[in-house]
Length: 261
Image (tube, rainbow, N blue to C red; front, side, top):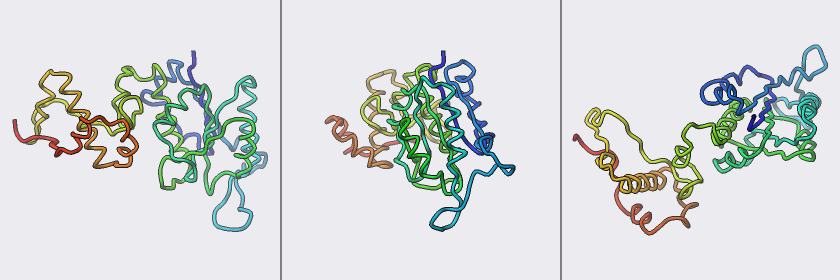
């Protein structure tokens, strides 16, 4: 049984081919995620398949016209008139997308992504469909891309991987960077594998100890130190969840890798 339906509207449907790879491709094959890609140009009515025009008020660039978007979204909504999706529009002017948003959207059964191009989509499309369903304009970062396809793929992967059953070992999700599941949204601790010594750098001794409590404490300490160094804003947001031991770790020096074993 499909856990989530995702529809994506784009003028470059082949751009979204990577969504058929890796774990997401397997989830689609297993029926966990249903993914439908729609070519916006299929909903135009002129021989040039026009989707854009000059902006009212002047200025550089082109704006995506409302008519093709209206036809495409009406077509998608008509496919299941008893259900109401959430529409996600990636845009640099949207609210910042976070792991908490990914976990929240993973609870929605149906998402529709509108991938803008050029200067973006005519605002009336957003305003009209916001009266018919929940519409969220989101940004994946403080920069500008050529279109919404890359951002849509980022959001889809972030959302899909927290759907129950998507990741083989769900425990792995709880200790990732930005996870909201345990102890605040910290960055992940350093990770190591074989061999124990590589180019004069050793794996920290505690990871060989077999003492699970000590390993957990070391990982927590390293996550705190890494977050303090790289993303102090995240640490400030988690300040209310820090224990006295956490604060002690933040006051100690960071050891990282040791010398030769």
